[in-house]
Image (tube, rainbow, N blue to C red):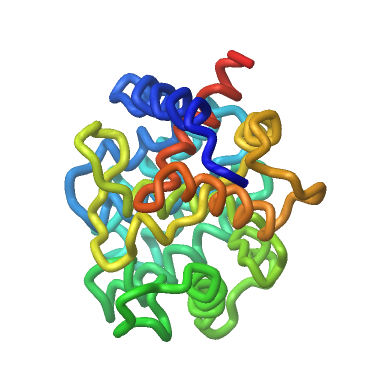
Length: 259
């Protein structure tokens, strides 16, 4: 695909239009924006992205319910809970994500933060000392690491996607955008420094896919990991250093129905 400067100009304007603080309240990214500490932002951002399934209003309400069950302090709850405290999570449910799943997530977070200061380390397994991270490898390694604790519930595996499954890994790619992208707009956090915005893969949900196809940014018929790679490769032609910023434009155009 050659660079279409008219498309670039149009999408750049749409990025500026949607990458604004007024985007936050109606999106799951509003959940980590309730917090100021890095660990709370990481934990609630990850949970919100994994639960980003269905209507955005419902997702936000269920995330807030989960935070309330953690006494409004997720990191402190995860690191200092007793077995008795965990009863507060029983009965939680959002779509197919239930209390069995969240209890394992809590166990994983406690294990991880007992060994590392940031969740970013979980996405650098096997690539800790590399200047450039292979994101496909990172996402596959993350899933293996996430389920490395003994006796993990097999049902929980479906909630963590990976390229090895041929998934677009939409939810985790969205979470990585939140944590890694850096600008002065106030939406994405940009609190991670070892993963680079240029290496990210664009989240490919139904809205993004539909709009991207109209612009010829996706040509593959099946929607899988290769589709997300194709989309991102074409977006890199428009901005090689920050291709996933166009997620704002494609998602916004799709949700607002401008096309």
